[in-house]
Amino acid sequence: MNILLRIVTGLVAVGVVAVAGAVAYLVVAPPELLRVATGYAAKTVCSNVFIAGRDPDEVLAVDVQAPGHPVLKFVRQSVDMSAGTVTARMLGLFATSIAIHRNGLGCASVPDGNVAAAQAVQLAQAPQIAPPGDAVWPMGGRVEMMATPTLADIMGNAALTGPGMRAVVVVKGGEIIAEAYSEGFTADTPLLGWSMTKTANAALIGRLSAAGLIGLDDAALRPEWTDARRDITLRDLLGMESGLAFNEDYGDVSDVNRMLFLEPDMARFAAAQPQAEAVGAQFTYSSGTATLLARIWMDRIGDPVAALAYPRGALFDPLGMTSAELEADASGTLVGSSYMYATARDWARFGLFLLQDGVWNGTRLLPPGWVAAMNASNGLPGNYSQMQSWLQGPNDEDAAEGVPEDAFWLIGHDGQTVAIVPSEELVVVRLGLTPSDQGYRPERLVKALTDAT
Image (cartoon, rainbow, N blue to C red; front, side, top):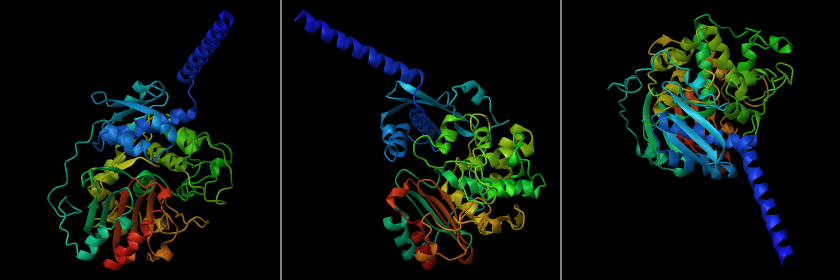
C-alpha cells in the first residue's frame, strides 16, 4: 500500500509540475494564435465601445466570439473607460493583449505592450465635430424620405438585406430614398467598413495627387527598397499588382492577422515583404499593400501630426462625414486597409461623392479620371480595379443577378458593401455582421432596388 501511495503521489506531483510548466509557458511565451485571438478581441471591443458607444460584453459575445474562431470562446476582457483601454486575456490569465483609444484616431492594438509610446501618438488637437445641421441630406442631417410600398417591402425583406444586417441606406438622384436599421443600431451608429477603407484611402491619395504632392508613376517608394522593389510604382500598389508577397487568408496566423494584431508598425511589416512575382504579372489582394499606401502618402505630407489630421481636413469635413474616423496603429500609421468607422449615412456620402466623379457641392476634389480608374480593370483576372475597388460584387455574379454593367463596389469583410451604379444614379450601402459562409448576395438587393427605382 505504501508503494502504491508513493506512486500515486509521484504521479500527482508530476502532473502538478506539468500543469504549472504549461501555465508558465503560456504566460511567458503564448502561441501566436492565442495572441492574435486576444489582439482581435481587444481591438474590436475597444473600437466598438469608444467609437460606436456599444456595450463591451455584447461586442465580445456577438461580434467576436459568435462568428469567430473557436479559440475566441476562451477570451476574457476588461475595459477601463477612464484610461481608454481594453485588455483581453485567454481564460483571463495569459496571451495578454491591450488596445488603447486616442481621441480622433480611434483604437489601436499595442502588441508590444508599449502603451506609453502608443499613447504618445496624438492629434495636435482632438477634432471638435458638430453634428450635421438641419439642411437636407447630404448637406445636413435631415432626411426627407418618400419611400414607396415597394421600397418598404425591399427594406423589410430579410432575404434581400441579409442575415446580420445592421444598416442599409439607399441613395437615388442624390437623396436618401430608403434606409433600414436592425435592433440596437441607428443612423447615428458608426460602423466598421473593413476593406471598404481601402477605397477611402485611395481617395485621400487622390486629394494629395490633386495638390501635386504624389504621382501615380512615382517609384522608389521606400528607402529600404534597394532591390527590384525600387521599381514598384504607386500605380502598381493601387491596382494590387506590385508582386509583393502577402497572405490575406484570415485563418490562423496569416500575414494579414499578423499585421493587424501582432505588429505595432504595420507599414514596416508590409514593406518588408519580398517580391514574389514580377510587377504586373499577378493580382494579389493585400491589406498590407493598402496600409503601406497610407504610410507612403503620410510621408509625403512630412509632418506626422499633420498627416494624422489629413483625412478629416481633406475628405471627411468637405463631404460632411462628421462621424468618420480612420484609426491609426500603435506607431502612428493610419490603417488604410481596414479600420475606418462611419455611420451608414456617411458611408453613403462617400458613395455619392464617387458617383459624382469626385465632385462635391460643385467643387472637384479628385483629379479627373481618378474615379473612372475605380471602375476600370487593373488588366488582370480577379475583377479588381486600378484604384482599390471592385468591378463585381462579393460573389462575382453581377451579370447573373442583373446588376447594371457599370456598377462598381466597395467591399469589406463580413458583409460590408457600397454599390455605386452610375447609370441609375444609385448608391446602396449595406453594413452588418455577415460571414461569407452564410452565402448572402448583396447583388440581389442592388438588383431589386434598381428595378424599384
